[in-house]
Image (cartoon, rainbow over the protein chains, first blue to last red):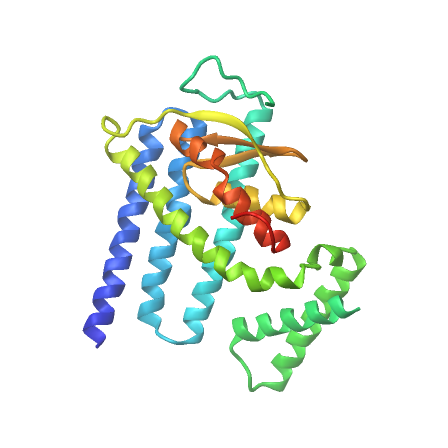
Length: 109
Length: 163
């Protein structure tokens, strides 16, 4: 039983590590601030979920697991707020996004 | 008043969970004092209105979270593909105003946060009519235009309408 749990836990942890590395690679590969924000989003969401989930499997049914779940909950509530604040501040500061279609300035439809 | 009690009780419950010390009278009393102080500050700041969630929202929230979690997994897959195989899955950054059909500030905040939480899309501006979204590709913006998420958040908000 503990072998199964270890396997599940390690799969989740390694998956989380892969996504974290992917986010870092994306940070380098993507061309501008806004697209890099999306790459960081991978690290913020599923990478964090898998690593915390893997740790929860290790901790079992305990207070530690509940705390880990709360960390994930708060992370998922606050990280979009931070991303949104960053993107909004960048746009307000006049940093234009590099868009695929040139004739598409953000205007209200 | 009922909100105040509810806030105090849930804060104390949360304190109990985080502390894990349930047998020391002194610590329990100190926890009670600190949650009472926070509750008092919240009351003084008159922020309690912001807590008046419609009761039905709590019942519908778990279902929405489950749906959102699946969306987050799919979106992660999409972004990771675009990171590792840029030749097969090129990016096409797009920015667009999308309509938001939610009636309350809370609903719009949930919608915008959900957009930002799914990798590949970030909500930049929100007003009464809509959300300005930056997307990693034209496809994710087209997906959002399909308004599946918008409808779900609106249904989460008022418990009716949508499909």
